[in-house]
Length: 312
Image (cartoon, rainbow, N blue to C red; front, side, top):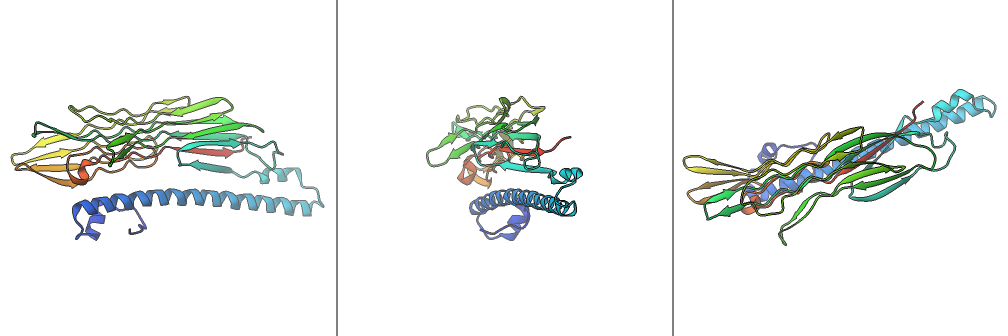
């Protein structure tokens, strides 16, 4: 696997690998893109945490100098400099987590405010179907997870409970689905909720969109985008079957494109594999019949961000 130094479009990546068969090329592109998105997100988290550590160290150094200059008594104004601007906790792994605010001196734990942002998990794309050997029905894209955000006032001994929703996923071997799940944050018994995107698990006999998740309880609530239905375009000599695109998550990931297959003279040719939903919370693309194009794409995991700060 090649390690990306930036995001590549499918067209750019394909020019770098012109000799790969289409099935192998689409599989490798999807794997490398997913690796890059996960690496990029982890890199951002490390950067934020490093900045917070540096700010804390500088504030502690300022306090030490003030204590020395004042003969062992820190000036009253120096307390301000012991308060870091903010501290960010990011959760991207599905599961349940708890943050306990310790009982402590405000200069040691200075935060009295937290902004919680939550994204629900994105649904997987739908399978495709053919009826009577001639009626081709492409799969619908997965619905996107919702987004909710709320500002809380916190104090010593505040309790924060977190649930990060998982992605919708298609198991190719068993031909079964794992459904996406919702995300939520509860601060001192006050909750916000970001629902999961819908995964259509049936083999389609007609087309219908999938629903995005529902957001509840926040100062800002935005429902997830719906997955679009698959399409069939009849040309004089070629039929193009395109899986539906996954829904996009508000302030989050972009929905994955659906698979594409062409039919010419009764022969089916896979053109594009369904794409995974972007993180966080986007839906995966729908399937389109043959080869790798017959596999619907997974959605993206949900996410929770907690941004702590001090408010006068």
